[in-house]
Length: 87
Image 1 (cartoon, rainbow, N blue to C red):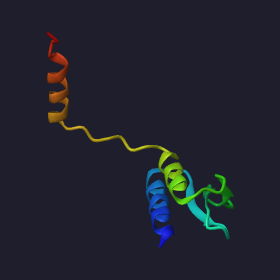
Image 2: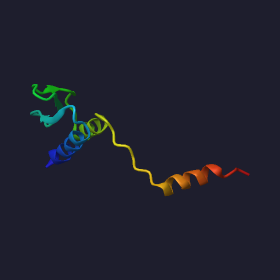
Image 3: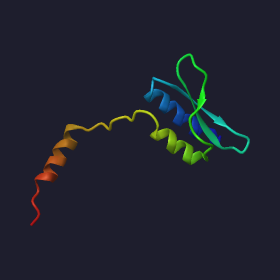
Image 4: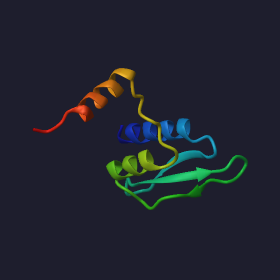
C-alpha cells in the first residue's frame, strides 16, 4: 500500500516528460529509488535510496513542470490589487 503514493507520482512524471520512461525500485529496507530509461535503452538509477515522502518530493520536482492555469478573473484581480495605493 505504501508504494501506491510513489507509483502515482511516477505516473504523473511519465505524463509530464515524454523524453524518458520512469519507474521506481524498492530495496529490501523498503526505501525507494528512481529509474530512468531512454527509449530502447536499459533503465539506469537516477536517485539514491529515499524514504517514501522524500521520494515523492523528488519525483514531483523532476522533469518539466506543469504551468498553473490562470483565469482572466485571476488576472483582473491581481491587477486590481496592484492598482491600490497605500495610504
